[in-house]
Image (tube, rainbow, N blue to C red; front, side, top):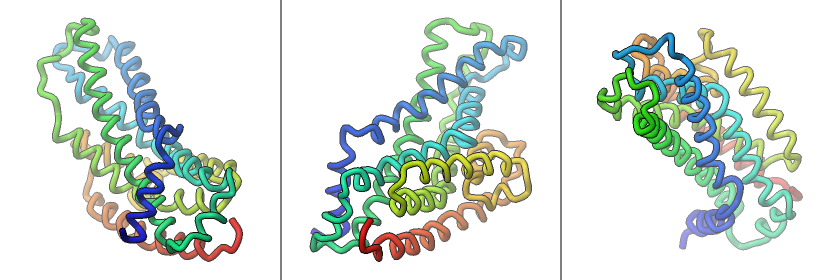
Length: 257
């Protein structure tokens, strides 16, 4: 078994039955519930042409990607880091024959997987919310017969996920580098607020904490200019590689963590 596969197996075992894994479902669900309640209260904007799939999907992805996702990533990476920080596990891990770099990259791959699952959970919960609304006859005047926008939802989930990679890499570095849980959360809160402000600026497509929000909005709302989407995707992928290598070098060179 290669070092990375060995480390991935160890990380997958450690994350089982932890809060980090439960949040994959709970985090997106809270956003979808809130978006659905807002839709239920907006009677003055509802008519027979209203597409509930698209409206709730757009609102859910908007709230998720703008503020919830940055905070969610900060929390997840901090929790994964605390698996070692809280028990002094780094000393034991780094004393093993498996190379240190494998442990760092395994944690980042697990984090990428967790965030990817949360994107899938978000889409599934959006669809479930509309199905329940239709079953309960909520807003019967809306167009429940409208086709499910599978392509738009899939694009929103995929693009916002890939453009969030750089954000994930940065928070993975922070969460693993510093033992203090408050530092990782504080960085996440400050960055999330900055990303919220950057969404409506020209720098939004270049800022790691706002690229996911703009990407999901562009996929669900055709009126949004998405000319910079390819650049944001490239920036996220290349930036992730660079930050991952720097973070790996910084964390694994520490004598005591």
